Structures are given as C-alpha cells and as structure tokens.
Image (cartoon, one colour):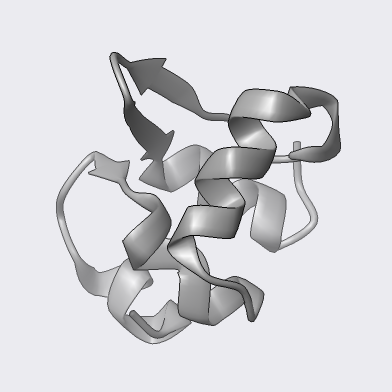
Length: 67
C-alpha cells in the first residue's frame, strides 16, 4: 500500500503487508524483526497470536516524525 492510501483508508489497524511498501521492506521481515527484536521497531505494534497489528494513526504520527 502506498502512503497516500494508508492516509485515506478508515481501518484502525494495519498489517505488515500494508506498510511494507512504505518502509521499503517486506512484510515477513517487518513481522520477524518485531517479534525477535522489538526494540528496533520504532512505531507502535502488537501481536495477536501470530498476527502483527499496527495502529494506523500511531503509525502515521511516527512516520510523520511525531510521537
């Protein structure tokens, strides 16, 4: 998904698939890093079982340089 699409959608939670293109990475790497080295992931996230979820508004604040 492109950043403009993430800004326009109305869902509350994103997945690694949603943000991979924006970060220039792939979903598996994002999820694996979050699970194995959570201190390296600078945006908020949570796991529900094996599913990584990222709050959309918090991700956008982080991406835009806010807290």
